[in-house]
Length: 116
Image 1 (cartoon, rainbow, N blue to C red):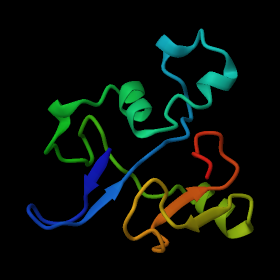
Image 2: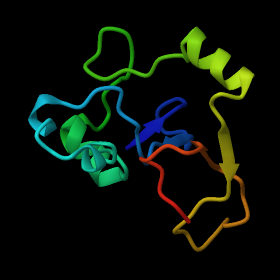
Image 3: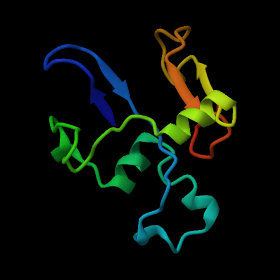
Image 4: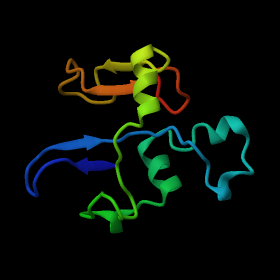
């Protein structure tokens, strides 16, 4: 899933490659825990579990929309500051150009994160 973060026509995008789900949709509840923990562990899986397809192209993400991005909760921010949650910054994987640029961030030790 790609999110454009600037004005229309300006190349400024965040690629969301995986999610750690707080809750699993009911239709997946029959799956083993190991599978459920990785339901959104890649771009195709993420879109499948959230039922995102090309009809979502160009839609706004905001309050009152079907899909929205939110600021970190106070609890999450505190967990980062205390070191309980570790945000890791590395180079991107699976690309041939810009491999030395540290443009990949993820929360360490979460099952949805792809390993090197």
